Image (tube, rainbow, N blue to C red; front, side):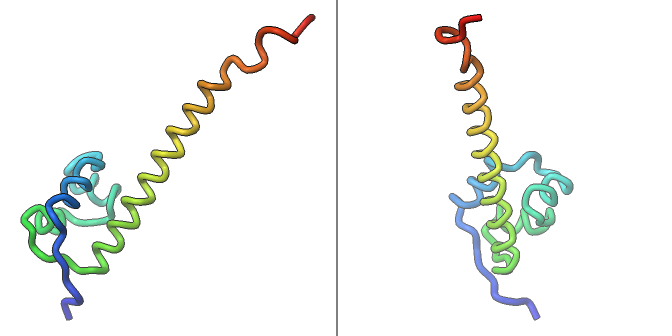
Length: 91
């Protein structure tokens, strides 16, 4: 049984591609948990299983959240790098 199928829009495909580390078998598996065949089907606007899309979307969102946390951590470290230095710290 093939399962329920859907097509990914061009805009969605381009967004997924923008966040892909590399268009290789390993890169696709590591980033989105999909095969090269699924990637080609998405690229060519052919249908993929809804369950596959759900898994891909979950990984995409998780990767975005991790990236945001990393960005926030860097901003926090930078903004607090000099905290405690200066006035009020008499020896």
